Image (cartoon, rainbow, N blue to C red):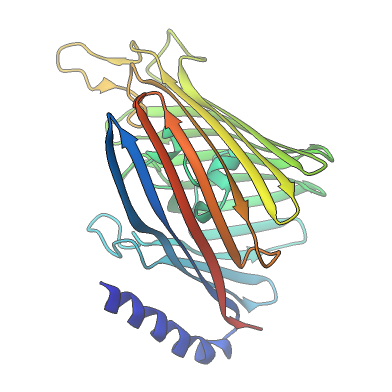
Length: 335
């Protein structure tokens, strides 16, 4: 495994200069590794791990056609249902006019959540509603129109994030990315998402980011309801995610709390019924999770980061967990 990863990195380094003549503007790699330990019921567990080793390519085909590719070397590259299993991004964007663009290929499902929108290498834990999605990045097409400076609306038709690969399950999303005030950024969406049980889920996702001096505070809210559910359309299935970072020199002091919930009645539990309508957070589930720690950037930029965080989750009340980690980025090519 180690030899395979090393050969892949060396091959990328060798081929990038050749592609550089073919409109590659930037190529870089990043990696996150760490040591995690926990104590539960008096039993200690610990070990080293590698979360990510990614290769990134960005470039252009013409003045108004660009592309992005991100491939994970730490993920199985192929599955029968998903040939691009290890490739997060493989999309091309056509800037048709100053205000309208069209993107096609594998790219994020447009959920309106800053937790979902952040680069995975920068997220130390997700809420269950996000973490247990079958896919974060799917094949599809997105049209985006800039209605005003810093305000855009997108329509997306894509593979469903509630399917395990390329199937006949789809997602339909209306997404707004904008600002209400200079200190208040928004990423909101309404999504209709098929799952593999034949149920369509409606997501309303409201992501809010507040920037006040050195403080960044994210407040995300998710409401989920199956279209088959006529009794409890609001606040019986969803999540709340609060995430804060306070910049102090080369440090970020971080704290995060998430709460996932789904009412026990949200499903078809009759004889022959499909069970929970929500395949991500099952009916009857309720849990909160909390983490606090810091990020340290010794070079003053994102090329090198040291992090540490402690977390607790209510489903494991006697578990205490601590992680220490290192993230670094290195350029392979830059035009």
